[in-house]
Image (cartoon, rainbow, N blue to C red; front, side):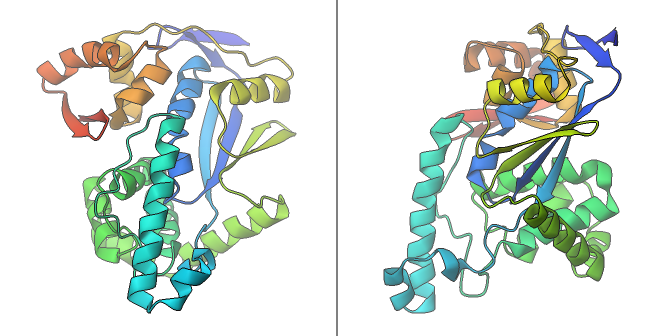
Length: 301
């Protein structure tokens, strides 16, 4: 396999690529906490791995996840109680990787918004109208849900995320309300069922005709080992160079990034080192800082 130089200081592998497909739901805090691991795979296997996402529709109806006590309450009170319990679950997931989660005033579900279906359809709609923007949209949708704590099951909130991504709103709404997005989601759910995936998230690692399915939250070591195994040892991690140029390259691919992701991608010791590398980009006006509870993000401008 020939190599080329990547901006992260590691040789970029040129040849057959592996594919990591994550089965998930945009509302999932567990998948949000997987982002640093995916950034690290990206920089340590430069040019060797593509990433994809398949929707899994976690919440078809909120009542499926409510306790018997919550169901005995009137609809508004019961869902408020469920939202409060769900917020606690999100908070418990934050230490997995340290990706900031803010549950202040959390109200993802309501009597009129009982499912995560709108989030799944929104992803499929963006994938239809702007395939190259789908993963960036998904990241911003998660950011809106768990960091900005916005009720993204509401169409007007989805529109704001679409606007933040610079996509045409009328084109999005036509796809969001149309049959093609529902057909794409149905195909994704059928694929999940055919693979026997019961819990989310799950990761399918593919290389040629070889596949491996990993369930749950995968750490970097597990994904790196899976990549080496499915490729028969052809794919292996490379060292990275922690530089401002490397941060800039990350931002080119991911215009919104947390300090935790920068640290994971470049093998840094903590947020202070990430801030030091990002500061020249901030000072030059090429990025802006966004504070978050227990962390920060930089956004490309």
